[in-house]
Image (cartoon, rainbow, N blue to C red; front, side):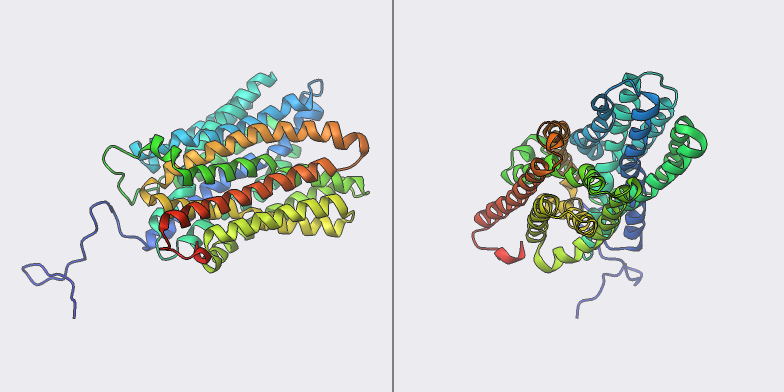
Length: 426
């Protein structure tokens, strides 16, 4: 029977870790990492998702003489730099570590919100609340999504799902908090309060970040990974997804108003989607275990595509819209929950941060193209006819192409494995 090694004095020693491991996996500290990553994602993505509250205020009160399309660039640049900046923060994390990069992002985000509270022109707001906050969020987002998968092996899907559920919970929490503070203290002090909250919560969480897997000498091969056909397939999925993902988020409340619902009831659909997203990010982990990660995410987006086409195009009832909000929010959360698992399985946990960064760059291009295109399509084809036909088709096509991209990834893996892995388990 095998026994643990002993020292010359006869004292039992712990098994030696592999050379590239700085700490053992699946320990109690691994769950500390999950909690801290969830808090970081709650603050960053939660504040990003609450921008709609600021947007309404800017359009109607602060910059009422400026077009809504111009104001929308604040929100667009946040997502663009948060996702696109991840291609830089991945290598930075490899070089300087998760803790330093995350804390730097916290400082940048807090300063950005504080400076935004002193702005007097739209371009200043785009630079501070948009570009600057997006850069800081990129330093937090990518490390926070990828670090739990590095610390967990046995329960990696569950750990990742719980961590990214923080972003869904943050969307609900910060939307509510922002609405209340805007009415009580105004938008400038709301920005300052959010800066302080983020500094305290995210700053504290980032202090606990530790790297478990050592980066290979020389770092990761960024160019080689970017050209890898498997990562290109994942990137295409992210691109198509972000072109169409926000169709229900942006236009389902408008569809509800068109059938006679109150503004409050219509806006509640966004809360339903956030609630579904929060639960779905955890449940996606269990589905990935049962069906395989690529199978589950491809099926999820195929269902989302059909739901968007059928319900937004054919159903004209609030019950149908609520069902779409909850189910779409739940299933569409698969991407952020499962993609880190897929990339960790392909490239290893030591390189998953860089892989996530490259994939998020594809996503940022989708956001940059998708958001303005959706507005133009709705304005040109749907608004004059009081319909959502073009938007439904746009959402269906993008989501279906995202599902097909994941099936393409599966085909690449099967071909490269020479029959070594079962199609049903990938």
